[in-house]
Image (cartoon, rainbow, N blue to C red; front, side, top):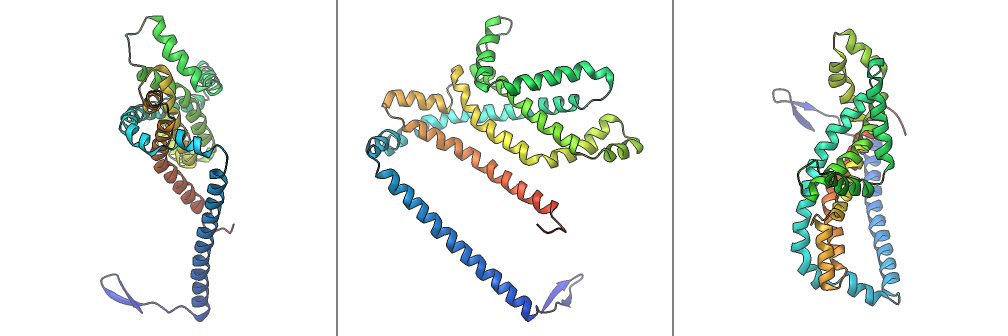
Length: 292
């Protein structure tokens, strides 16, 4: 067997030995057997769960109230239009969280005594907003700040975006700080010995390594933020959740909430799968040369 190499010169590759061929055949057979077992076991579990649910006394009423196909079709355009507002809020909130969270992580990592007041403020900020439930922050920001009368009137989605940025930047800051502290001190010393400033060391050496170490955790935070964006409806923003609430009040049926929930799952799944893929790739990279 030959394969092209270099400038087109064929290079012979040795055929696998009998032992290696037997191993490859065994792996293929075991892989097919694993797939078959997985499919069969999944089908059995789904059937058992389905039979268990539909055999309950109240299934007929629940099916009519939560799984009405006609109601789902009727309210889908309305809920989908509200979801577009959630996506816009998520876009701007992600940018704000990334910027503010990075600044907080950098400030908390400053060791010069002159920056002690800034470190205290950053620590107090992260402790406060990590402890406050998001729904309380939404009330404080969405109704408290406009009540001061010092800012012009803004749509509720603006205040909701600010509340989400304030809350999630504290989580992201702590994740980034953990990643920065996981970078070995020799990396900083080597960068400074090459003439890089403190800011240059952070930007070119520390932050790239820190982000790579905590990428799965950061992506999980953004997945959680995708779900919590729906809480802006409590401020009066007509998003997917509020649209479902309006449709439910008109139809006397809870199916619109199910439609909204499925739409949120739909926008979260791509990032969830990317998070899993990044985690697997990072695990493979860390296990190169070792046996687990």
